[in-house]
Length: 213
Image (cartoon, rainbow, N blue to C red; front, side, top):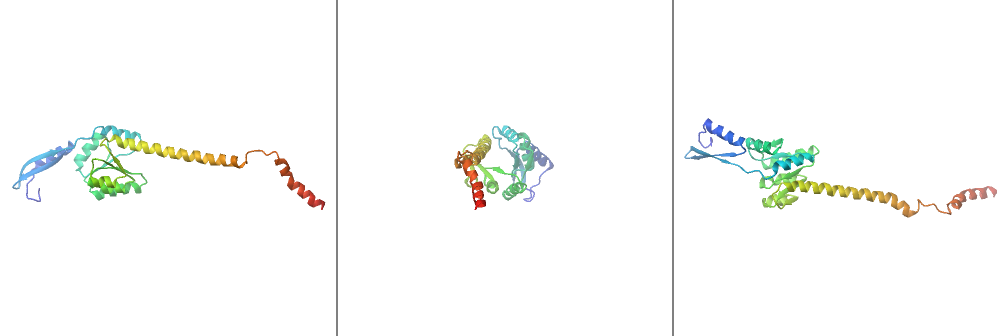
C-alpha cells in the first residue's frame, strides 16, 4: 500500500498485528489512495488437529509447520495446535529447500500439503501426502493421496507403514532361520548315519594297507 501511495496510520499497523496474533490475515482496503478499512480472514483449524500433533509426538514424529502465511498468523496457529517449529512466509522453492535440509541431516521427511505451492516440497520429500480435495498438481506430486481431509489419516498411514515394515522384517528373519536350520537338515548334516563309523575308518585302513605294501 505504501508503494501505491496509501498512507498507513500507526493505528492500522497495530490492528494488523492484533489480527495476526489471533491467527487471522489482515487485508487493507483503499479507495482512491485513501484507507477505507481492514478485512480479517482466517481459516478454521481442521477438527482434531491438536490431538493429531500430540499423537505424532508420542510416536516420536516431529511436526514442522512450513507455510506461506505471515509470521504472526503462523505462530498463533502453531501455538494453538502444539507445533514448536515454524517457518513462515515461505515460497514454494523455500519449502522444498527446507525438506532437503532435513534430509541432509539424516531425517526421513514426510510432507503433507494440498496446494500448488506445496508441490515442489511434496516431490522432494521421502513421502508426499496430499488430499483428494487438493489441487491436481499436488495430487500428481504426492506419493499418497488421502481421500478425506481428516488429519487422522496421517496417523493411519504412518502406523500402517510401520506395521508393514515390521512384518517384512519378521518375514526376512523367519526366512533366514529356515535357511540356516532347514537346509542342513535337508542335506542330512544333522542326522547320524549308521555307516558313519565304517566310513570314518576307511582312511585309517587305507593308510595301513599302504604301510603293508
